[in-house]
Image (cartoon, rainbow, N blue to C red; front, side):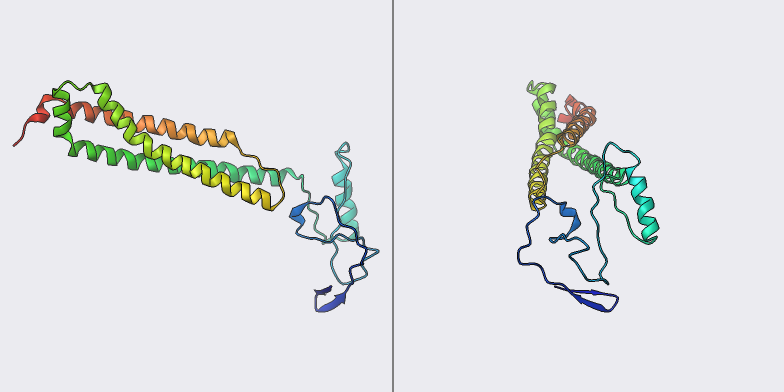
Length: 217
């Protein structure tokens, strides 16, 4: 193996009897773990993996002080750092907010579309009401008209997103798990949006089903 660092070329031969590592973090982006004694390339930067005592809350601070005394410019990465957890949580909240905003935009588009269709069918609606069609039936037709596209789109999005997430988790050798709370939250938001759009169309629907809608110029 050949390494280059600051213009200096170093060579190191992987031992023939090198054992495989059973467990390591895939985020490290490496396939070979060696000790400084076995690796004699002096000009290649090292990466040390340090296991700390989880019962000692000051262990990470002692490690930081030790690393700083050895090399003030060394970079220490803590995989259990709350900062990284909060950063991922912030990204997750942003994605959820984006999903809700997208659903609201879809709801506004559906509302405009349904209102336009009701105006185009005002005479048909008035005829149906004149022949005794109940308002509940007409309201249910509007509900189906709004709910079916949302249900189909949401089902397709959940199925596609879950499949992609499962593939990515399998690639990094992580257990496949889904955030059902987030999926349920988005589904609940979609259901509320469908009911809100339907309720917003009812005043126009009831006005168009009056007898005045049968008049023609």
